[in-house]
Length: 204
Image (cartoon, rainbow, N blue to C red; front, side):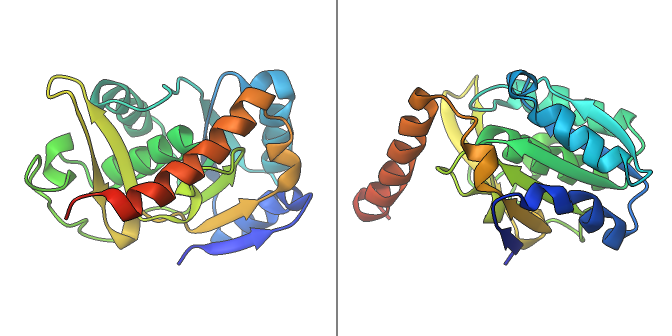
């Protein structure tokens, strides 16, 4: 299980959490739209106030694809970092998981993707610390050991599953979710409902 902190204002403890891991250089994965709410600047200040170097990647695609993953992974492989922080919804957190996985244990994308689409290769070892800061309440990606991706050429959605993928810590701060628009708030609720219904209706 991911270590979970749940409290209004808990984002302020992000710097402390990174200090505890010994991180010196952190890669922040986020959504361009979150700059407008001030959340990116807030997280940036919290991390940098601890004397930690921060690099930001904000070119996130909603519903990540193999193409968007490859672009993000290439960025992660260029950056020298010893920890990640994901600020955003499920698409952002899943992208950060993929960046962490493929920059720590490089491989072709299909090597880790679940069989029968990919090779289902097990993750060979632990990943770098990843702290998830969800801004939505629908996917639960901050606590799961799964990465979901759309394969464009095959027109299907699949994933990568392994215990090492799970974020090290999830900081669930309700003050981050109130930055959502009414439409995103409603969509997050429908996301929860859809996942629950799928558990009863999906074929083995």
